[in-house]
Image 1 (cartoon, rainbow, N blue to C red):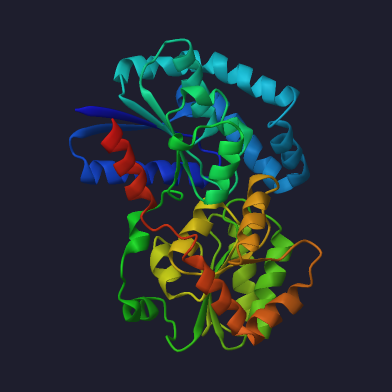
Image 2: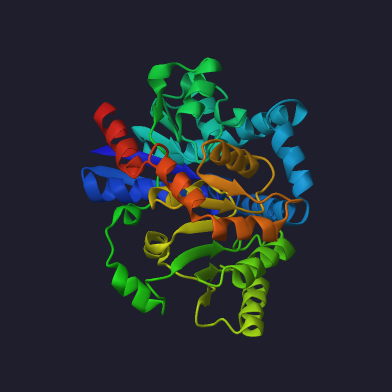
Length: 376
C-alpha cells in the first residue's frame, strides 16, 4: 500500500480546497492508497498557526499595502532569508509526522510545507518524492526554494511552466494540469431544478456575485458594484453570496430592500451549491483567488474581478485579463460605466466565453492524481 501525505496551510481557502480535492480523488479512485492530510503550521504549533493566519487576514483586509510589501519582500532580500531560515527550523518538528507516517509521496499545496520538506530531503532525513501544487495563476519564488529536491510541479497554465523553466527547473518536472478542484464542477446538473430551488427565472441572465467572504475587502467598493448591478442591469438576476461577512450580508439585504428587488436579487450568507449556481451563471463577479477563478472558468463563466489582495491575487487578475477571460474593475475605474458597458454589450461576454476553453482544465484533479500514481 502506498502512503501519501498531503500538506496545506490555512492562509486563504484555496490551499485547503486543493488539498481536499486531491485527497478525495485519491480516496475514491485509489483505495489501495493510504492518505493523510495535515495543516503543516497547525501541526508544528497551534498558537503560531492562529497568530500567523489572523495576522494574514487582518493585514490583507485592513492594510493591503503592507501585505503587498510583505509578499514582494518574501521573494527576495532579508525577509526571504528569514522565511527560509524559519522554515528550516520548523521542519524539525514536521519531521516527526513524516517519520511516523513514512510516506512514499508528499504533496504540498502551500510553500511553507514545500520548503520544510525539501530541507528535510536535502539533509537526508526523508527519501520520499515531493510534489508541489501551485494554487495561483503566477509563481512566486517561495515555491521553488531547493527545487532540485522537488520531483513534480503542477501549475495552472503554460505561462507558469515557461517561467519555472526559465528559472532552471527541468521541463520533465513541470505539468500544466490546472489547479485541483472538486469533481462537482464537472457534473451535469438539472438546471431547471436549480432555478426552482433558488427562485430564479431561467429566461433571465444570472450573475453570481461573491462579496469576498470573511475578508470583506473593499466593502464600500463592493457595495458600489452591487448597487450598480441592481440599478443599471434591470433584466439581470443576481445571486450575491456574502460568506462569513455579516456586515456585508446586512448591507446587501438593505440594498435589496431599498431598491425593492427581492424578486430578482437573492442574498445568501452561505451555500454549498456553488457548482450548481456557476452552472447557470452568465458571469461571475469575485476577487481573483486562484481557486474561485478556476471554478468559474471550468464552469464556462467569464469573470469580473474586484478587490484583489495585493500580490498573488493582483497577479492572478493581470493574467486573466491578458488571456481575455476577465474584466478587472480597478480602484480608480468608473464602476457604473463598466457595469453599463457589460450590460449593453453582451457580445463582450460571449467573446470572453469563447476564450475560456484554452484555460479551463476540468480534469485537473484527476490528471494530477493519475500522474502521481503512475510514477510512484
